[in-house]
Length: 315
Image 1: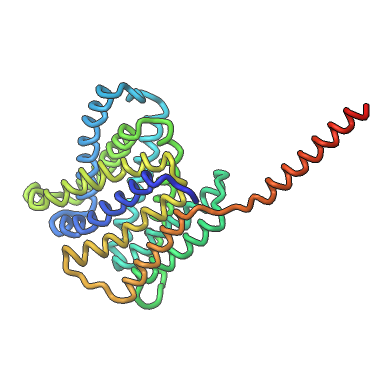
Image 2: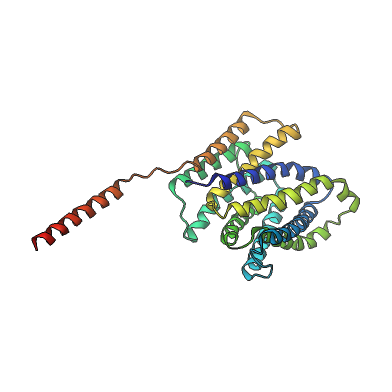
């Protein structure tokens, strides 16, 4: 599928930022609970994006008013779905290994094309091949031994379905509104909904301050910048292709874990990374279509034109 490389690069950059954010999450949650971490990062993301949107309005004019109904509705839907997705993921992570959690969460790349069919956006055979190839890569990267499904894993499967819906919601709303404001609304909603579970974790200010750098990274870059890049890129990129590219987050998280945390990559994990990269590269190769049908149609039209001319002469 032919795709504008500019927007593909945006999605790759999104995956890089999210991959590094995994390291930040590991470091941050040594001091605070998962809902505290997600709640604060969401609020920071909204606070960073609000002045950015104001600056862009001043510089380039108002693209979409803050009170626009489509913008508000899109922000509300994206925010609620994102909150449910991240919450389901946190619950699932508590009961399963990080590798299995990463694999089950990445199932959204399979669910996106399935859900897209209901929206009359049928992925081509090439995209399905890439999805299956990426799924194999994720299995090699994340799963060791047999894959068994337990009760807690159902939360991660639900998380994958919700992330698929978030991608499709972005695909629906992003092309029609200011993406910076849409992203701002999304994180404001996610942050507000995180307040109740955040309070239940009883966070201590000193603990929050001890991990201010990971939280700041996750809030400013992972939330504020990366999700906005996702929305901007999905204006031009097929949602199934976008989900495949963003799944490179797992590859980059393994790379950053190796570089920053000193984690080792096995041969199986390296093979998984290479298979996933291959799947993403294949999505960028245009499909060559045979022009035979067009040529045949043109030939028929020429014959009909000649016959018509002869008939005119005979008349």
